Structure formats: C-alpha cells, structure tokens
Image (cartoon, rainbow, N blue to C red):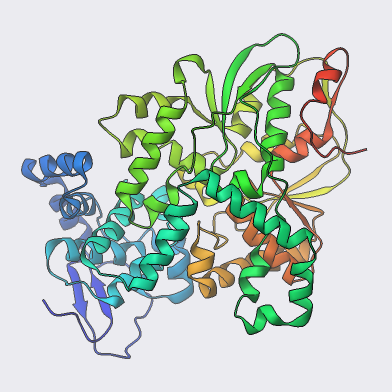
Length: 494
C-alpha cells in the first residue's frame, strides 16, 4: 500500500487518510460502542497469534506478530491522551499513544507501508510510559514502541553517514566501557586545560556548529578505576554489587562514590564487577534489540548473583531497564535471577537498618524533588526520594509541580529532538524559577544533565544532585568506623 500524501489520522477502526495541511483537532471521546467492540476483539485473539508472540519474544524474528498481539489490548478509550507529553503539546492524534498504537498495528498488518512520516510519529514518542501507568487495559506500551521502532529498523535503509554515526556512538562507545573512559579522559583534558574556555570565548564553537553540544557537556570528573571490593565499616550485615552503567560511570561518579560510602556505613560489602557495562536501554529504545540483548547477557554474566543480597542501581533509567531483563530475555534463567536482585538505591537504603554510630546532620536548605518518568512509570516508586531525604533534619522538601510530566531528557531524546525536549523542560524551569529552591534532587543522570543545562541557560543557581549525594554529604560517623570511612572520598558538608 502506498504511503499517504497527507497526515495519517487514527480512528477507533484503524488509520484514515486526511488531505494535506488539515491539522487534527483534539479528539473527543469515542462514540458509543467502539470501546466494547475493541474489548471483544482483544479477547478474541487467536491461540495462533499467541504462539507467534511467544516465538517472537524468544527469537525476535516475528516483531509484526508481537506488535499485533500487544496492540489488540488497546480499547482506544483515549484515557492515555491527557497524560502523553507529545499529545499535550501538539493536540494531534498521531502524536498520542492511541494513535501510535494504531499506526504500529497498521504497519505490522501491512495496511500501511513504511514512510518517513510514519517513522517520525514513532520517533517523537519519549517512551516515558505515562500512558502505560494509567491504561485500564494494561497495554504494554513500552514493549510496543520498542518493537515498533525495531520493525522500522528492519524495513528502512538509513544513509551511510547516519549508520556510521550511530555505530560509533552506540556501539564503539556505549558498548565498550574502556573506550568510553578514554573519551571521558579526553573531554576532561579539554575542560581543565582551558581549551573549552578559549573556544567558547572566541566563538569558534558556534561557527563550527558545536555550541549546543558543548553546552550540554557536564564537568567530567577524574576517571580513576573502581576497586573490585569495598568492605563494610565494621561487621558486615550483607553483600551487594553496584551497577555503574555507562554515562553514570563517566559523568556522575560522585553519586556512585556516595552510594558506596553510604552502603559501607550501613554494613554492606560492595562489589563493583569490572565486566559490567551499558544496561542496553538506549539500544532497546532505539530498536536495536539484538545489540540490547548482547549487552543484557554481558551484564547478567558479570554479576555473581548467588553471592549477593542485591544489585544496586543509582540511575532510575538503568534501574528500569535492569528490572525488565527477565521480560526481555524470557528464556534466560540468568536474567530471571538477575532481575530478582535489582534494587533501586533509594528504596534499598530506606529499607535497611540504620546503625547507631551513623547520623545525618541538619541541612538548612530548600530542596525540590524531581521524579523521573522511569521512577514513576516503570519502577513505580515515586515516593522513595522524598522518604529518603526526610531523614535529613532541617530540609524543606517540596515536590516539583507536574512531576508526572516528562522533563524531555528521555535518554538521548534531548539530543535527537531538541525542540520538543526544550519545550517540555521549559515548563519545569518556569516552576523552578518561581520557587527558587537551593537544590533540585533527581535520581536519573539524563534528567539531571538536561535540567542542569536549562538552569544554567536561565541563570538559575539551583544545584542538581542525586539524593544519595545529599545523604552522603550529611553523614557523620562516630567510633572506630570513622577511620574506615576515609577510604571512600565524597564531598562533605562542613
């Protein structure tokens, strides 16, 4: 079927073509009976389709069947629309979960052929999964959009330059931790040598078209190697391993260091396996399923789960991906054992006993809490940051208004779709400009970098930190464990 010349509009009965230049209005509720017919159709999915779906999960060769299976659950009720960031901004059905599901179903069924316009509608999705959290039919939208993009990858030949750039960034760097560390050392030299300051002052970055990328570059800390093992302070009550990831390992080492210190203080031995690497989320969400699988398998092999009480994740984006390894690798026993050990650091610390020799000193500061989409919609634990920081005396805590709306970071989305990402971020910045908190606490590295860049551009001096950094700063240790505490460095108050 030829690609449509005008926008693709979605109705409860599938895609419909509209003449070019006719913007779609905000769709109202479905007419009577449509939802009931979709429920009936969802419940009548054949056993043949179910078998194909299972086969597709195992081999990733029948994406179309997986998409059709998952799409059948959607009753097109529209309850997801008010929660979708791109629909709220565009008021276009094509940019809503309901619309995208219909597009993916049509593509998988052969009703629509591949086109640049169709790909653009799926690409504009942030994969925030807000729709999934509120869906009454429990549609697995995250799996749908990943598979939809993967199906596009199998049907579209990208230009050579785009393929090479993607291969370099996604495979040669993110997939190779030692290469990423080498790049980080180069970027740090660029920053500390004065070269960055000189290029900014002369305007050469702007002339070379690199000004925006340079503005997004966070300060790169020293790239020293982690030790394999960090012993507990005093008698050990358990053993955990720390997942360092890729971007977090380069740009947010202070959070990893703070986490090690706090866990050691609580009585946990902390292992940092060297063979671990990228969690695979960026590959998974861009349709590179086979490469994501390879990264997942490497991580499950890197951790000796039989000797661990937990595998600790600090970045909610990574934690969300790690928590779904068992679903994404359904035939892997290692993936199931691995997933069962995954714990978000905030919730793990909250649930751990606090030793008498460790105290949190008071901090007179106003802290706004930003809840990443992965924390809210995948890990389903929006309260852990607030519960954790409530332990610090003197803090004036508040949640950022509209915390259920995406900030626009969404992995690499703020690089690939800067206009929409900035629009969504600006709404957050408006709230921050009116409240002027001293600190913004967020548990995801991508959100932190995106928001920090916006705060700097708006000349707001709010510090952006992971909640574990605040906990470590205010941590004071008495008695014999004080000497051991010096073995892990962290910036401390006072």
